[in-house]
Length: 237
Image (tube, rainbow, N blue to C red; front, top):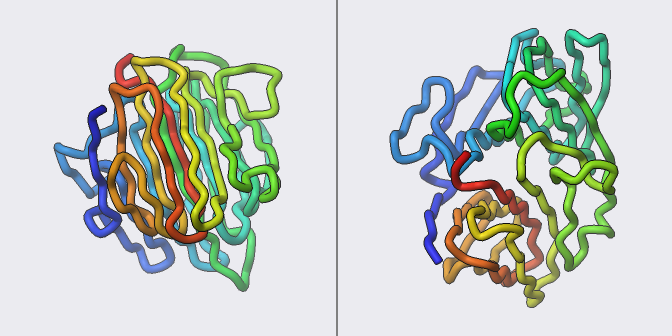
């Protein structure tokens, strides 16, 4: 088993006043040649957006873009005419494909929104742009891995144009789980949303992460109540 440890304190940081963003991988003005990606996981941004503010219309193509609100609600508009709001408990994915224009803004004039924006390189290029969102209960994540994103169509998860799986769990203190990878050529990026866990023989706290590969499974043990996101991706295209 090989590991790459990414302490929360070593992430990149950017502030525009209304936006505060921590970057697990090189993004925008933050560049670290040692943190370009983990396999086909390209971006993991931990964003805080003030009330009434947001990202203006901008374009993407040939990228799988996943948004996971942690607190508050996020308003989405795109060039297909779609308007949507996602909030804590929801997961949204936009397959940019041949190209799409979209905007994202805090849906509240009084409260900030916190969300993760994650980019994964696509399996097939130049597909027709696709959008989907789904709600997942906290109870469904309790002491078990809940798959919220997968390449399996017509499942309870949201489809992604890549052999990738996103799983969430809310662990009680003292609980342990094994995450079993779907393929030997895959790796898993374990990201702590809240709490204190042990994974890959490392002690991880809020927003710490470890990338693990060349293994069949990863043990995750909660030292305190904890919330964890696991992103499994191919290590190469």
